Length: 94
Image (cartoon, rainbow, N blue to C red; front, top):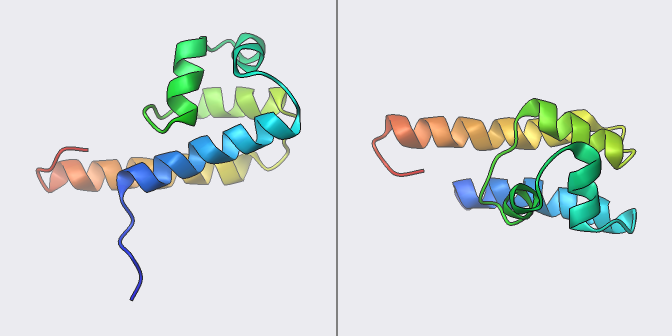
């Protein structure tokens, strides 16, 4: 039996993936944020699964990281959004 997907799991997957890509490029969190036009605190929140970036920010981050599979990142973000919306509909906190 598979484990139910929790909101934090999906956010962390997106954040973890971005962190992995950033580290592969040997770029600091602060430098990535500067190049993508995102503050350090928001970048930190994205990587730690506390903030879901907009599709535009995801595309910008992918461009800075020279990552061609933007769809992968957008799909991770959409999954998070879908889970959040379902959680709200059910009357639970996201």
